[in-house]
Image (cartoon, rainbow, N blue to C red; front, top):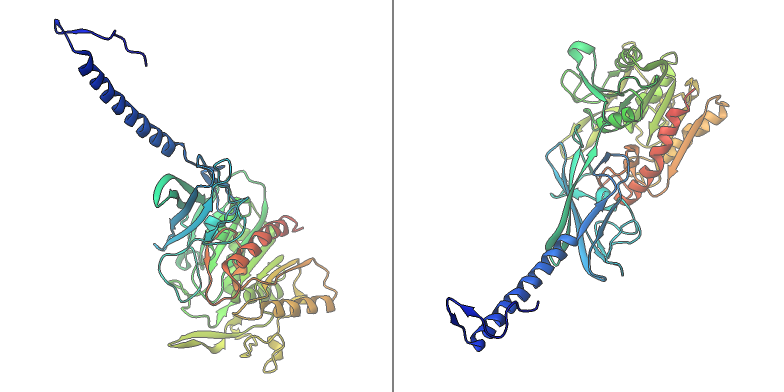
Length: 444
């Protein structure tokens, strides 16, 4: 900037020496230069952005995350953290190198190190793992109002940009209703699509030997896609048996009849959706209540009625009589865990050919809980031998573990004992979830 005055200037009625003024101008110039540098550093910090296509999005939908405003070749760490409804915090950290334009796009660039490998749009989110150590598999519990995820971009350990994402467990307008044994005769949470939705099949969905109400996330998302869904517990909650023993199939039938009466539910198209030990109940309901069950989804299934189980201190849960009853009588069961063709009780094999509607199955080839793909193969063989008249779709995921039965994609899962890896289970879920939605849409 050109000086506003000549070499000498008058101040306070007298002249200031030129040399003194030059020293002052030099000092001012140095201060200005320092301020300019500081201003550029501030501008650089502000120029780094975490870009997302949706700040709030359904849990089962991908969200594109990228970073811009970096120096070409600059190394950056992207981290994410979220706290589930159980209070457990999950974290992920992945290192990247900015491209020639100063951008990082995980959809087109694999991390150089971190929580996952390969080019994956949602890797930062599905690879979240518990901050504390676990000795068993753990799936994130998603709050009903949605999951808040903090994403931070760091350079040399210093935060340069951050953003908060909301992953929604239910779409706007979906209504949740708690139902308990004292009033409804069963323990569940019902998710109804927004008012005015078209009449759709109703779904009753339940989990496996973990007990409790473990399928609320899936239920909320199915309702978000327009399917009225009841997440049902059948043991391990107040007012229910505390162990998987002598659970009456009539209990599920009560829930199905209630669902059939709800607005927006097509009572002629009721679906049971069971995971793991819950797959037994789903298949048995299809066999024994053909007028009530019109389609069956059985995920990481077995083809037999296994024994009931009770926890045993220091050892694996042990067999304890029948798991299921009908009309007050125990259904035939086997103690041969993992055998599709049990010799101790051949009648324990579920007669799936008597189901009067379409069937959807999936399995993990690396399932370490039980050989779900062998069970699935035995079910298919039985259906084919009977010339089963309805659609039966079977999906086999060779590298996935038992966790593929909980089919919501992008749901972080920490894998220890169920087989597969977090990555192989996630890829299987991403493939299967649209198939499950398509199956529901095609129910006649």
